[in-house]
Each structure stands twice: as C-alpha cells, then as structure tokens.
Length: 121
Image (tube, rainbow, N blue to C red; front, top):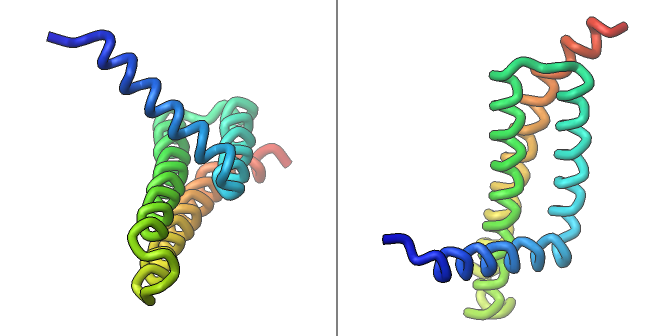
C-alpha cells in the first residue's frame, strides 16, 4: 500500500534538491532558459507530436546530466577534495557527458527547427 506521507516527503526532498542545484549551478539556469526558448519555438512553429517528444527528451536529458554532474562533483569533493587526480578526472568526465548531451540537444533542435525557419522565410 502507498504511504502518502512518505511519498510527499520523497517529493519534498526531490524538489529541495532541484531548487538547490538550480540556485547554485549557473549552467543549469542557462540550460533552463534555452529549454524555455525551445519550448516557446515549438509552440510558435506548431511542431508535430513526435518532434515534441524528441525536444522534451533532449531537454530532460541535458537537465538530468547536469543534475548528475552536480551530485558527482559534490561526492568527489567530500571523498577527496582536490587531492587525488581521479577527483579532477571524474569531474572532467562528467562535464564531458553534460557537453555531449548538450551537443545532442543542439543537433536535434537544428534538425527539427531549421526546416520551420526556412519555411517561414
């Protein structure tokens, strides 16, 4: 049976974590602004359902990767703050993963929106 109090508590912790990283991570704020602009363009150009699915998927992927990156950075700093070379490598690897997801999002966005831009000219 579902314990409503525990479920609410879980959501409270989750929103608390998202609020914290949104407040502390500049890249997440920039990515969120780009996501809002992208969603607005989707409404302006009246993109198709499949295109919406892809846009939402890559937006969530980028935000998810940034969230994981933030968690890994904090964990690495707690375990061995800037002492071991692997700590910096872990941070660089995660930053690379965020960058790859962002590049993917840009490519998907261009594939979807460029025809709409050219059609509107």
